[in-house]
Image 1 (cartoon, rainbow, N blue to C red):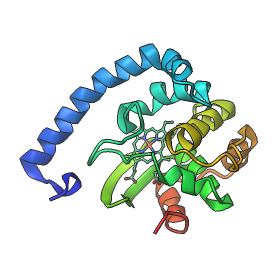
Image 2: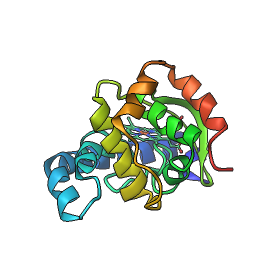
Image 3: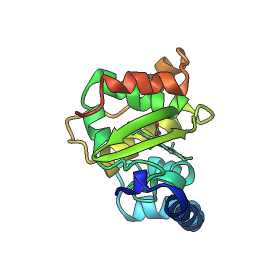
Image 4: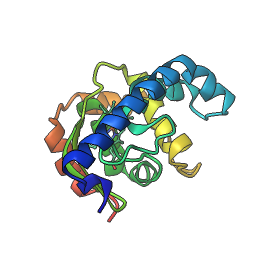
Length: 173
Ligand code: HEC
């Protein structure tokens, strides 16, 4: 049985443990994010700092995800970044959140990611570039996400369920 499908007491215990562990990780991440990003030679150190402050609590400090809670960011983001609609998907996910069942690898997630519209365009672009290049290792030929790409999507607000609908046409098979 996968963790995502583990129900009842086991599922709740796993979730409680994960949350308890995450609080520790998040505190560590906020305190050390900037230094960790620079020390580890991240291509996007400002994105690394933002990731530790805003994303690591759910996706883990290294983006490996948390079973049954939030998906890993180590592979799919590179494939999204390789085409225009996938790039829009990444931007929409951080701007508007994501709600409803999705599959990443073999694992099913059925939860809600909050929106990060409060972060400015440059910060969101740097955060996504850290995910795409530093975590998911997109090849150097892929263009970075620009602040203007964030601004363009901000102009057409969507709800988090519509972001999931759009994902169907761009997610890896
Ligand atoms: C409160 C927990 C939480 C936080 C904080 C969070 N996420 Fe998420 N994220 C999720 C969940 C849960 C999903 C899957 C949502 C679903 O099941 O529909 C997700 C999905 C994603 C996806 C889509 C993956 C795919 O394969 O389509 C990306 C990209 C992503 N998150 C990036 C980020 C970034 C970047 C940040 C920080 C700016 C962030 N997340 C912050 C919980 C979170």
